[in-house]
Length: 285
Image 1 (tube, rainbow, N blue to C red):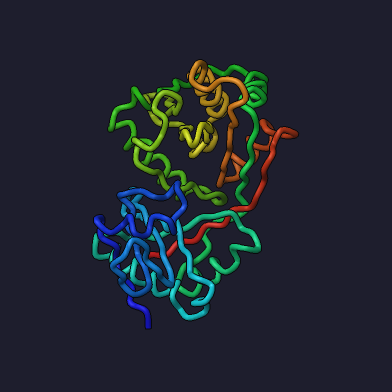
Image 2 (tube, rainbow, N blue to C red; image 1 turned 30 degrees about the horizontal axis):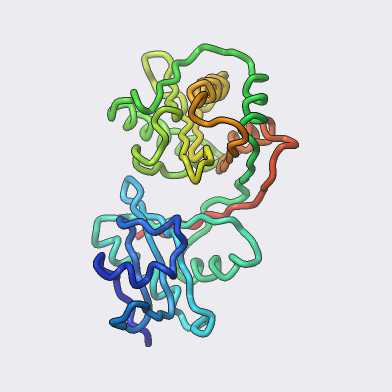
């Protein structure tokens, strides 16, 4: 039986070569299944990483079990260990989301065996050049009913109001699930926008990340029955991006609710270079 343990900060470099570059975050919880080895390189049976989000939720960002140790309960053991530990930190949910392919079927089975349940699927991942995307935005009607406030100018109170609006909308919608927000500092402050309406009530938001010179739409939200929110958000965001992202910089769109799926299809039709299905799992702790 392999010992499962948390890797302390001073030992993380030993495992660096086993992890993708994009998830080597010092704040991540790094859990390994294997024997401790004092050397420059550590051989292990399995490795997984977890990152804190907000509202007590954590995300599984990476999990891998060496082929020679598959089907021995190692993946489930790491997930159970992480769940118990995160629960002791005060966390109440562990989530995982990834493109659904033949290669990821094993991950799904592992999650299901570790008491995760599928929470949503069928998301779109599409990408296009920024210039083509701007043409789609230019074709949208000018509404002007809402104020789009850059994240760089948004107060902490407005950020909390956005989370409240997302929670309330999620409780009333019959279809569609809104993903959890990351920390405010994870998004591009100049381009990301929070949309407000009458009495400064939050009506929507579009939040971007800059991933390897790709302007990535990381989060998209609009309340029901607020016509024009999408147009005002997108036009304001594209205007703010001028001078920051030039030429053929790729614009990516990852949507997880029907409203954003429809908008992605309309704006990126014929220009998408990638499309995949995404599945998300969650486990209450």
